[in-house]
Length: 300
Image 1 (tube, rainbow, N blue to C red):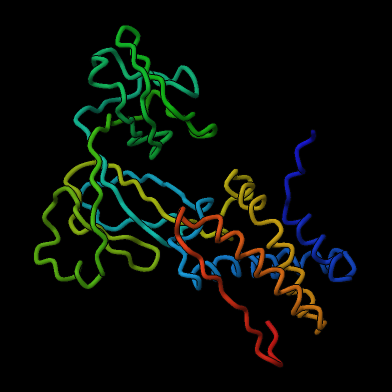
Image 2: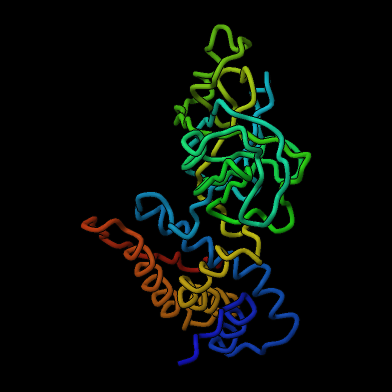
C-alpha cells in the first residue's frame, strides 16, 4: 500500500480554494499562501490557548543549546521561539580540542579518558565549527579516542579539529523569574553559575554573569509560522493538521467573498481543531470543547 502524499502549503491552499469554488491561479494561490494559511495556523494555536490546553502541541516542542560567554548575562532567544521557556545550565569537568571527526556519528576526543568517565555523558561543542551541538556519548574506546554519539552531527556544520568541547555530566534546571526580580538582585555583576533567568522581549537574562563556559539548554514551543519549511517538524505538523488547515483556509476564503457557506466551513474547522487538541491532551485529562462565535457584519 502506497504511503499518503506529504501535504504542502500549496496542496492545502489549492484544495481549500477548490472547495470554495474560487479559481486557482497565481494571484489567489499567493493570497491563500501568504495570508490565509498563516491565519488558519494561528486559529489552531489560539484555540488551544482558549481551551487552556496543558501547553501547546507536541509537534512544536523544540530544544536549542547555547554556549555561554563568561561574564555575559544576556542571550538571544531562538528565532522560532514562541513560548514555554525552560532553561538548564550544563556543566562538566572535562574539556579539550577535537582531534578529528571520523564520521557524522562519532568524534575523536583523544585517549586520556576512561570508559567510566565518558560513556553516557554528553559532549557539547563549545567553539569552532559545530558550536552549540549537544550529543550523548553512547560508547567510547580509549584505545582509539573515538566516541560514538546518539544523533548525527548537523550535516552542514560538523565539528572539526579546531573545535573545542566539554564533556557534560551535570544538568541544573534554573528558575524562571519576572524581570522585576532580576532587577532586584543587589550584586548582579559577581560571576557564578547562573541559578535563574528572566525573559525580556527577544532575550533571556541570567541572574548572574557566568563565571566560565557553560551550556544553556532551552526547551520551548516553536512558532509554527517560523519553522523552517525543510524541517521534519514542519512536515509532521502539516500531516497532523492537514484537515483543519484545509477547512480553515476554506472558511477564510468564503468569508472573503461574503459567502454564507463560511459558517458551516468554520464549524467543520473548529471540529477538526477540537480533535487535534483532544489528541494532544494527557491521558485522563478532559477537554470540554469550545465554541466559535462570529460577530454579525464583521469580517476577518
